Image (cartoon, rainbow over all chains, first blue to last red; front, side, top):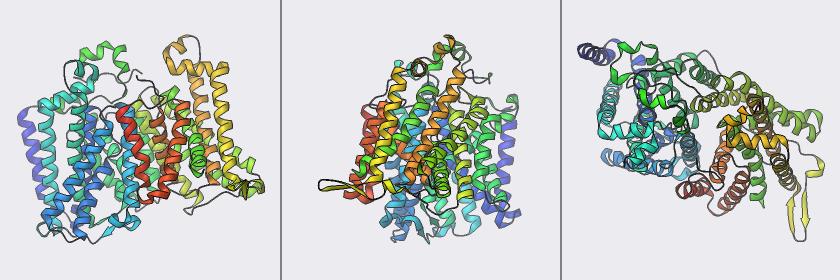
Amino acid sequence: MSRRLALVLTAIGLGVIYAAPYVLPPFVVSLLTLVFISGLLATSVNLLAGEAGLVSIGHAGIAAAAGYGIAWATVNGLGVGVRVLVALGLVLVVSFLFGLTTMYTRGIVYLMITLALGMVAYGLALRLSGLTGGQNGLTGIERPGFVDVWWQFYFFTAALFLLALLAVWVVRRSPFGLTLRAIRDSETRAASLGYSVAASKLMATMLSGLLAGTAGVLAVWNSEFISPAVSSFARSAMAVVMVILGGTGTLLGPLAGAGVVVGAEHWLSSYVERWPTLLGLAFIVVVIFMPRGLIGQIPARLLPRSDRPQEPIDNLSPTSEALSPTSEASGGRGPRAGGAG
Amino acid sequence: MNGLSFGALLFLLASGFTLVFGLMRIVNLAHGALYLTGGYVGIVTAAATASFTTALIAGAVAAATLGVVTERFLLRRVRGKELPEVLLTVGIAFVVADLNLAIFGGNPQSIQTPEVFSGALSIGSISYPRYRVFVIALALVVGAALYLVQRRTRVGAIMRAGVDDREMTGMMGINVDRVFAWMFLAGSALAGLAGVAAAGQLTMRPGADTDILLFALVVVIVGGLGSVEGAAVGSILIGLIDAFSRVWIPELSYFAVFAPMALVLMLRPQGLFGVRE
């Protein structure tokens, strides 16, 4: 895809985002706001999964930490600036803990530990009822004045999402991004070239945590309410579904995935009662039939080189490297036939 | 002592989990959902037949059936691809847990324990609920059986060979697919058994599946993935820590379980009994 076409498409995209509140009914716009928030959380998962090959099923826990920070500070009558600082501090601490406990692991172990950490976050949200309000959560958390009206909040959310995309784009092109990809492709090789694998992973987790935290704050401002459900396993798993559904490692994949999931949830849950069953079935179908996601359905030549979906992450443990020397040679450029197990 | 019986439950659960992982490299996140299914089926069976033994068997069979169906029709399609395998089990966990809610309702339920196990056993001045003694005994029997099967039989030899080198085992003329299917069946049956046993001590309710899955995860992370010995030591450790922290620091008991996990991960990432890859 040529550079000019990319620019035109970007301009059209921005134009659509800008025009939405003027032409669409408020209800749809609020749904779009939700898509951006979910997309942001999915983007934070995608940053780790796509660049570093680390799939986290616990990111809702990080987002919830920020959400509870904002909520607690609001309930206790602190100023807007202080609220954001509290949330930021909590996010940094929590994602540091996530990073610290996972930096020596990879693949499936990483996934399991983030899952356990996410559950611990849920447990804490439920049990520390003095701070979190327990099962009932904290209510009446008003948005700050400048985003009080629905369309203001929509623009604010969209702007933050675009900012996050820009950040991810910058990270991907930075030396740090390349280090992460080196670690993803061969941890042993990256280590022997002198990169500090553990420190890079910690850093990546914290960067991703910042994005997740932003999503957490926005989610609280959106619903003006927080309960332990925001840190649940289902929420974390949903973010992973969005990433895979959209296309792992692509810039816009998570947003596409979020659009489909949020839209489907909203539309279907008014018809059928068993939404979790549907979500589970969607999970199964996506994993079996669409491992490369929605963006992966677009022919590769139409996509900018930097935004082609990776081949599905099949083998999380690096043992397979030794068996397939060809995978080193192809350097992960084009899609190759996935999954020789 | 409460910690010990909870540890025994954890062992029943974690041993199945770790067995499946050890051989198949599948992190079965539907393990909690299978446990819940086993528990519910056990409760219903016990109420219908008034036989606790039948309930135990029915729970294990129900979970095993579910496990075999998922292995045969879903997991086999993505065999050897680790991430899709895990994500599939997440999907299955959602479906199974939600169907449990649909079938058995949302109220917490417990199993009707037989006469023999009600009341307390007193040795000297200490009295202890009989049911918990039964759970500990059950875990000991299962643990001993697993150990003997693994060390003394041909099936055990194949299992150990499969853990060490899956491809080579296949080369030796062993039908790895069939071994996998049986392994998954055994792991699922253990989850179901744990569910029925737990139904007499804890309650079965929506959400119990993810609660217990957290404990199983922590146990196998601490003990080392794929190691039955590790599962045993990890279960007792986590069971005791959980019981003590519930008494001493009730609000932070969740955190207390997580602390040893973090410690183990930083000092010995492969777990106490794990083998570094």
